[in-house]
Amino acid sequence: MSELDGDRITTRETPALPSLNERLRDDYIADCQRGVDRWNQIITKHGIDRELRLPHRGFHRALGLFGEVKVSPDGRILSEAEWDTKKHEWLPTETDQAYLESLMQPVTERGRFASWIAPPARGVNGQPVDFEYVRLA
Image (cartoon, rainbow, N blue to C red):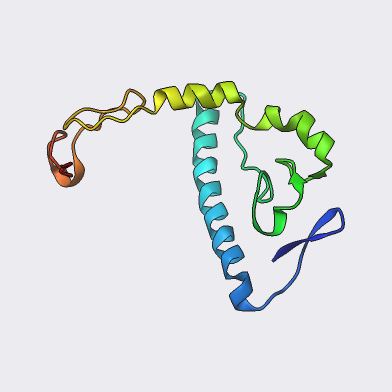
């Protein structure tokens, strides 16, 4: 299990039950990495000079092991001042958040989709796209 040792991140063996959550997080991160690897293959195939990377598991955490420290995307523990200087390079700004919220308008009419979602070619289990999956009362 990862833990803080002063200003370093180390790994130590722990009993199964306390480390279960971290193990599940390891599996989740590995699954996300497989997706990022596939995206990077597509990006490379199209000649784009860019590579996507997952941030360190401690980046922008509010709870757990890393909840009390500030960790950069590459895994460095930062001072509060350094975090405040750099966080807007890594996280959405208030302007970004407002823009995202402006896109997230609910659409509940059957067969219609929010503007930020591409309509599927067909519905779930071969149903028509405008199939009434959920009835809103």
